[in-house]
Structures are given as C-alpha cells and as structure tokens.
Length: 338
Picture: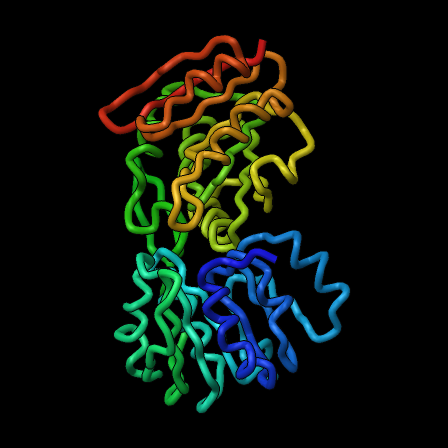
C-alpha cells in the first residue's frame, strides 16, 4: 500500500495510536485511516470519496462522517484527533476551530502537513487552545502533537464571506475557490457570455456558484445544473442561489461521474492543482468527455491559465475551436459538437 509522505510520518508512531480512539479529519490524501491500527476509527471527509464508502462496509470499528462540520455527538467517543493540514490556511482554521469546539479537554491532537503547506502556522493559530510540540520532521513533512487545554466556539454563519458583482451576492466558505475574491478568470468567462443563454446548462466545479449566478441573472429561463465534489462548495452555491432568489440543481460529482443527461452548454473554470501539485487531469477530463454530455450543436466553454495550452486536446476532440477572450493570464475557449 502506497501512502503519502504525511501518512508515512504518522506510521512511524503507529504503536501509540494502536490504543487510541482516533478521529481523522482534514486533507486526507490516501487510505491510511482504514489501515492504521486503533481501538476505533472515525473518518471525517468533506470531499466525496467512493473508496471510503466501499471499504468501511468490511470494517466494524471504522465510521465515516461525510459532512462539512462535525458535532460533539460525532466526536464524543473519540479521544485523539489526527488532522491533515490542507494547502489553504483559512480552510485549516475553519476546520480546526470546528473540531476543537467539539473535542474534550485533555484529548490529544496530532497535526501533520507538508513543509510547503504552511503547517507551521498551526502553532500560532491554535496557541489559545493547544500547545503544540514537534514530534518529527521527515520526508518533507512535519508532525505536531499536543493536548487540548481549552475549547473554542464555532458558529458556521460567521465564516461566510459575501462578494458583490453586478448586483449579485456571491456567498462562499473557506476552502472554496474564490473565497478571498472573485477569480479574474471566472470574471473573464462570465463576461464572455454577453447574451441570453437558453436550454440546459452544466456548471462543472461550481464552487461559490458565481458563474451560474451570472448566467441566471442574464438568462432566468435557463436550467442550471451545478456540480462539485466539495461539500463546502455545494453549501456555498446553495447559499448564493438562495441569496439571489435563483433556482438550480446542485449535485455532488467528480466532473461527469454523477451526470446522466446532455446539455446545450457546459461551462467551467476548472482547477489545475491537486493539493500542492499542478495537475491538468480535470481540464483534460472536462474536454475529452464533454462530447458524451453535449447535445448536437451544444457548446463547451471554459477558461484556463495561459500556461496550459488546450489546442491539441480540443482539435483531437472537436476538430475546431475558438478563442473568444484572452488576456495576459487567461484564455476562454469555445467548441461546438457538430
């Protein structure tokens, strides 16, 4: 079994975890939670993971918690937290404050993260509630441990941020793309739609719901399906639609994994990072498989950073494509299914 550098560091201390009731949370990148010996294991995920759903059926002492935030009821039977630090510091604060508001005084906490992820910020962020000490620094990762000395409070509504754009209110949570500000690429893509769009539209990686809100503002009679694999994005998009009195269908899906029908328009500002690494898999997947989910005459329109050249993939998939907007940093591509 191949484990990440962070998990390999945790494995060095597997003997001390064997007699603990462990609750895993954060940026879990592999399946260590299933295989690490313990009295009892809880796995909290905020991104859809089919593996955990399937595997835990065969393990009586492993429990899955698939939600944005956890409650004291979820955690009451655990006495140790193993938290995988994400690349986004604001997302880490959001998740850890929620977790610390639920764990009990004197419970243990272990935080592991890649050196380049900003995990060292955990010491300062948590100093009011936990005194963290470095257990080990190896394999480009750091493992901290500590005892919870004080509880914090957590109120979900306090973490929503609201952006405004052309009289629209965009609601978003930490960890969702565009949390600090509306992304420039998303704005460019939204501005490229300068007339009414009719029919069925699929927004892949909807995030805060910004693109869908822009379309519904100009084309209130269109039918929007919005998909993402992060619970925080689903909740943000739901809040954006509700705040602006829009309606749309919002689904969990890894690109097209939960899509069964065809559309007149597929639109996306796809991610090009997988954790801390650049990864163009999602962009390639969106392009190459779009022809299965477009109606004849249907359009694929997306924006990407200029350092990724989509021309070869688009030619192989559609034969023809158009560049309809371009800046020094971003390009908006368009292709039709003929």
